[in-house]
Structures are given as C-alpha cells and as structure tokens.
View 1 (cartoon, rainbow over the protein chains, first blue to last red):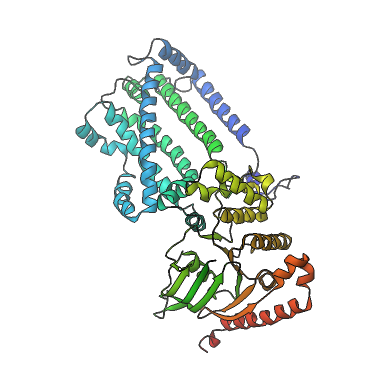
View 2 (tube, rainbow over the protein chains, first blue to last red):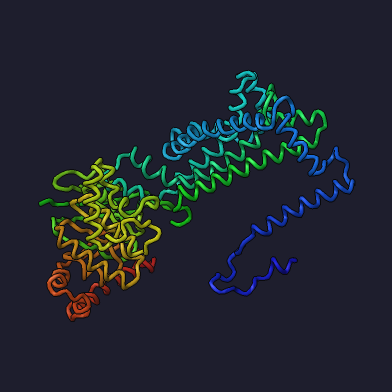
Length: 275
Length: 270
C-alpha cells in the first residue's frame, strides 16, 4: 500500500513524469462512499449496533419518506428545507453584496482597511454560538436574527477573500489602464474587481460552506421550522434516524451548492489559473 | 508637431540599508520630437526603466521637469501609451475587447472603437484573432496585442519597456520589423528600452546609452539603420553589414565596461 503512494510509476505516453496527484480519483471516491454505505448496512442489519446509536439506512429512508409525506416536528421535510434554504441563501446574498465591496475597498484604501480589519479579524474566529445570545438580546427572536447570524459567519471569509483578490492584479495592469486614460473609479471597477474575481469565487465557496455549518446554531432558538431545528428537535427525543436523515439532507444541499458554484466559476472565470 | 522634454531630471530615494541616498537618475536631459525613435540601452541598474516610469508619469522626479507639448507631466494619461515587458493584458477580455479597452474607458461609442481597434489589430497582423482569449495566444501575439492596444488610444508617444525581452529570436525580428512599419505609418514619438545592442541599433533613430551609479545618459548616437531597412527591406543584410557590426562592438565595449564596474564593488567609488 505504502509502495503505491511512495514510488513514482513509469510515465504513460502524453503524461508528465512525477506530477503530484496525477490521474483520476472520482471512481475511488465512489467506491469509498459505497463501502461506507455497505459497512453501515452490515453493522446495523446484523444488529451489531443498537438503532439508538446508529439506525439502519433503511430506517433512515423510512424516516425520510415519513418526513416527506406526514412531516416531522410539525412540518414536512420540504417546508423545513425551504425555511433553511431561504435563511442560508438570504444570508449568502446579503454577504455577497456587502462583503465583496467591503473587501475590495479594504484592498484599495488604507482607511477602509484600518477601519474594518480589527472588526473582522476579532469576530472571525469566534464560534457563532458564543455571540448568538447577544444577537438574540439585540435583535430578538424573529427571522432576521437567524439570517443575521449566518450572514456574520459568511461575511468574514468573503471579505477576506475579496481583499486578497485585490492583490492578484499586477501593477502593470493598473499602470496600463491609467496610461489609457482610466480614472481611479474605472481602475477599481474594470480592472481590480475583475482581477479579483477568482478569489471572490473561492470566498463564495468557503462562505456558503460556513453558512451551512452555522445553520444549526441559527435555528437553535425560537425556530419552528428548518433542517437545523428538525435535527435539534429530534435529538431531544433521541430520534437518531431523523438526526441522520437531517444531516444527509444538509450535506446534499451543501454539496450541491458547491458544485453549482464550481460550475459557475468554470463558466464565468474561464481565465482562472491560466495567467 | 509636439515635443517631449526631459530637462535635468533626477530621482533620489532613501537607501534601505544605509543612510546614504540612492541616486537612481542624475541630471538626465532628453528631447524627443514627433517621428523620433529613441532607444535606451544600458547595463542593468542604469535607470532605464526608472526613466520610462518617470516619462509615463508612474513616478515623479525629485528634481527637474518633464513636459509634453509644453504641458507638465504629472501622471499617466492617454497621450503616452505604454507597452510592458510582461504583456499586462486583461485575461477576462478577448483580443478585440483588450484592444479597444482604452477607448471604452474614454466613453467612445461601440461602433467607433470597434473600427479603430480592428484597424490596429490589422496593423499588427492579428485581425484573424480578434475573438481569441489572451491566454490562447503565444507570447509574441500577446505582445502584438499590447502594441495594438497602446496604438488604439492614439497617443502622441509610445513608451516600451523591453517588450521583446521574453520573446524568442525569430518572433523578436518579426516584431522589430513590425514596429518600424508602425513607426513609419504613425510618426509618433517612440521611446524603447532594450538589453539587446543589435535591437537598439536596428530600431533607433537615436540611441542613448546609459550608465549606472548614478543613472545617467553617457553617449548619444544618431542612427539611420531603421530608415535603411524601411527603404531596402532586408533586415538581415543591414544587421550583418560592416558599419552595423562596428557600431555594435563599440557600444558593447561601453556597456561591458559598465557591467564590470558594477560587479566590482572596489570600483564603485571611483
């Protein structure tokens, strides 16, 4: 096994010798997933693990069907999913229209950088659960504080990515634009912002991922719908089949959004990695 | 008929590791008229690029004046186009959009700027490639787009900072000839920096040789190899002619002298 990893194989025609991590890996990933699933099926169906600790895939599937039709925790799965989706997407869109301009401004203006840097760097590493009480005290228990909590979590990585993206523009590109009669505003909007797009997209991918991870925290207090709420509620009744079902649904949506962003990135930023 | 004037320009900046100020340029004088092709040559560290940056308005001199048509140069503007060593094109735009980018910034309407950009792409021989993305072009083609882009703003002056340094010998020769044809057609002021003595002699109607520490112009030559090429059309014949080779050796001698001096710290204070 170790030999497979440590020894360089002879090069195949048209390939580059010694390129790290060369070749396809998705079929291996698929096998991994199937193996884990098979193992899960085996240990549960053979009764080696109690359903409380790990319900069988079939029980989770049954729970999924029940959730789709009759519903769990007072709502159907579709309603839970829509509630969570609107929170995460709402926060994501809010962050997109605010964090990207703030990040760009931080990159091009020392006053903005000085202003926002301590704020972002201070709250960024804090766990959202730590400041959740404050947000409830300040903003109450409606829909907005839930979106706001997710928004805060997404804002920092997106702003930092946009700020870092400003650096991907070369001095020559800026000089060239000025020597063609550009104003400072034009340089920022037509050169720096465009050059920062690859990094902004990376920030968007990190941001939406962080958004999903914050979802459960956001739905901890006074939610009556949502995937995070559904999981927390099920945990109180030790309904581990619902917990696992909820986790899988969240995972699938998070993965789907990442795939969507990667696809958009390919279409919108074809020059990425080619300059 | 405009004149570009560099009079008594110096640039000094504080040293990083010593208290002694570093003199990048000292007392540089240069007059360029429409239709002049000035080439700057010199050992590395002689201030060629600094001089170009000052002329473009990317830097400000600590002493002296730079004027274009009597107007003080206080920053970059569309009357002085720049072609860089690395192409500095915008990878999210295709060839034609890159070429017309300057006119778009200036608010010229789409049809007019397309026409001008297409004309300039044809001038550099890239009309077939107007829909290509920049990263699908070879280095030589990218540099040609850079030249077309600079020409599209119709500047009075074209500043070029070693635009051919990263190109292979064959492409270099093609673009040299192309540049001379553009020069003949447009009668703009050209200022061109290079490391290659042969390139300098072939392109320039005037050659300035610069020396380091402090950066200054030490020799000026009036040349006519470029006109001979435009009349006779055979670049290799000119580059291998007796007077071209003599001139090349003479200038190489000057530059090698400078190189040896800057490599040997004991000679620095002479």
